[in-house]
Length: 301
Ligand code: NCD
Image 1 (spheres, rainbow, N blue to C red):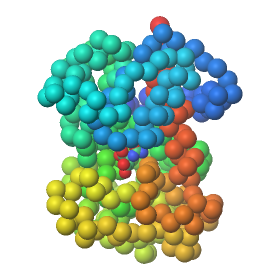
Image 2: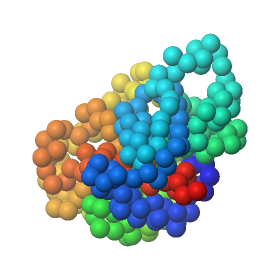
Image 3: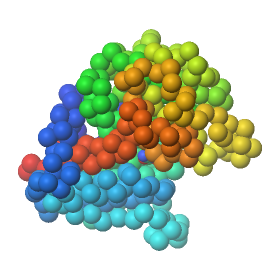
């Protein structure tokens, strides 16, 4: 494994190793044990788009493993503002660090960076493309919460068109014999470029009614306001779905609700107190999972 641009870059056994290792690393992730796995290594976090969880959990992961971090959270403080190209920026940073996490509004940016960089590039989200490390922590969370990945019935709900997390997640879930229900307004349906890569076993819906009682997992996403070419279109679909404790009345008792976060109203806070809510544990899981990935890319030499 070299670059992690899409979830397809990871083989089944690599995903399994990362999830297994993440579990072993939980005490280190919590700060209860120490690790020197990547001591002397430097991770660059280059974020051209807002981030809370992805950047901070990568930085925590690197530091918990004894490594160091450089980077920026606001590209307006970099030469980007002077008109420097992404290609030039990546060429520089590859000389300063042993791996690069890149988040950029343009789909395909991480692929471009990987072609230029001679250190591993990890895609931290490329526009409406993919978000493979979110998928790794989603898979880890599903396995921790439900005890397995195989044969589940999963609902992906919200902005399936512009939401990058669901693009990588759907591709990954297809490897585990998952029955997938895509629930979205028609204008935000799962793109054909994603569904074309899926085996049979998925269906599209515009409401959760009827589907909910079958689900083992409901993955809720935010409507990606920043990606709408026309703000009017956003207004038409904003608030299309709100999941509350009442909405979940007909769900299986063991249903788990996940969300990559941030939520902006899709999940009412009264869900937080129910046994269904797993999204805050999910957010924490970014640390051990990213540790396992960094160890795999940078450790052991
Ligand atoms: C997501 C993203 O950036 O794609 N956030 C995250 O990394 N947890 C989801 C979102 O912004 O809606």
